[in-house]
Length: 190
Image (cartoon, rainbow, N blue to C red; front, side):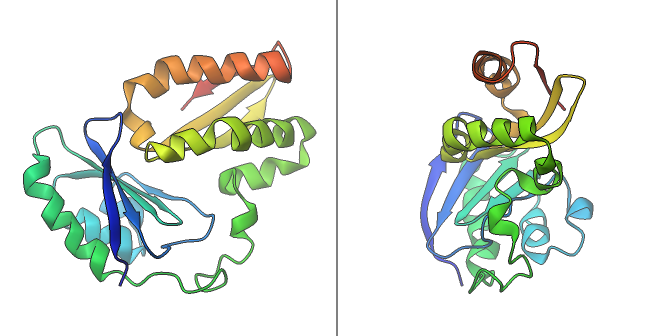
């Protein structure tokens, strides 16, 4: 059973980040907007079962839970701790069937697009300068596609519904990519 090392606020007032002592995955992010979307992911579904949960995002030793506007943290936090503590952590990098997933820092779709040297360069820049800060706030960023000089990204976790992700952070990412990779690239969040 994973032990909760800490619970941290995020810039998104409706999301908190649980820091765990044991990993729930290795390098692979899991992001769900509903229990139905979670499908066979029993860990995420158990968190949705608490009620008042809008999204669940987890990777490595971090779980970010977003609540509804109406829910109060004082009431829901103790309830969320129950399924998190009851979950079975991943014991090895191959323990969850994702042995190569640790290499896929940019996410599943990012790995598929890795054949494009521009996407590889963008992912390297995001890995170095953006993703660590988003993870620190309980979120993540995945490259979804790159076509006709337009980079499509998806924010996950606390960043998925945070207003600053869709304004200031998006603009900063676009400016950084334009300055360091190609001045004609446009970045859009989906």
